[in-house]
Image (cartoon, rainbow, N blue to C red; front, side, top):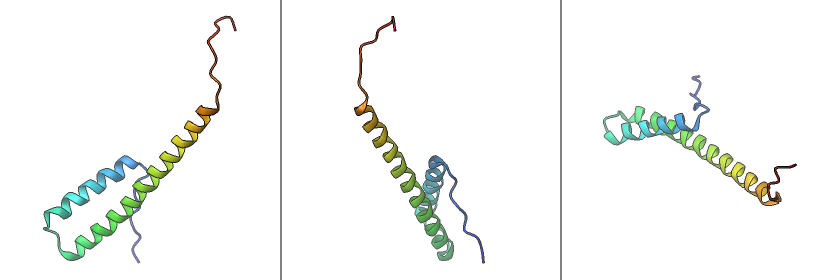
Length: 79
């Protein structure tokens, strides 16, 4: 049984690979079996990117909520 290739941890590298796959598939020169393999890989990469975006969105939301709880005071250089 073959082991599936896992996406790189980096969002950017996964997105870059996905863009290359899409371009390759859009050319339409691939044999059906290879096109299906690339489609499957594309789905893996898409899910990886979606997960990374959800996690980033959650971090932004948490940081925004924390920023709303912080009291802003005037700067006093003597303290």
